[in-house]
Amino acid sequence: MQDLTGKLAWITGAGTGIGAAGAEKLAAAGCRVVLSGRRPEPLQETADNIAKAGGTIAGIELLDVADREQVAAAGAKIQADHGTVDILVNNAGINVPKRHWPEVSHDDWDAIIQIDVNGVFYCTQAVLPAMRAQKSGTILNISSWAGVHVSFLTGPAYTAAKHAVCAMTESLNMEECVNGIRATAICPGEVSTPIMDKRPVPIADDVRAQMSQPDELGETILFCARLPQRTVINQLVIGPTWNRGYVAHHGGGAIG
Image (cartoon, rainbow, N blue to C red):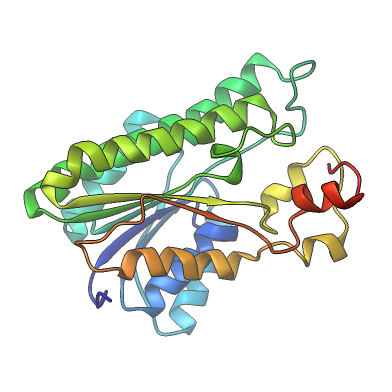
């Protein structure tokens, strides 16, 4: 496995959930981490947790990944200040409560596509030239179970967006493998993160306790990053053992 000491990792959506956990695990493994997101308070909390554990914070960037100019400027600043990004974790993503065909609005559809698809594209484009120049780079895109299996639960916009992320990831491997760059689509099932608060039907605490937890996805991110650069997991589908989509087939009823 690779020694990640001194590697520069940029994590989007790093204030909470999978992004925060991934940032903490990468920092603990020796990476210099850049945290980005739209809200300063959660980013600072992640930074404080990393600092308390002895990790290195290279920077904090307030950033809306849907804004291509912001992303380009942030990417340029990060690389000017800290060098080439070795590991990019495209984690920033959203869903909305009113997500199904009868109720999803044009504005909500656009917001999901802008953040969940375009944001991944913008951030990746910001780091690719330098990765090509150094003939090395790891891009970890947080997709979803809904990026592999068409899902009623997540709604058409999120499902379409996460399928796009998986396709984009595979195209990166097809085109950039000759430049030593690899990409993984990490496709988690239900994870107990703040995005669950956006579900149309509230989820009980005992149910959330049986979901995958952010720390486990942080370990998954670290594992993918530590693989020797000659090896890539193109797509990794991971979910809770007590998978509610499966439990429904045992008479557990529909899930919300």
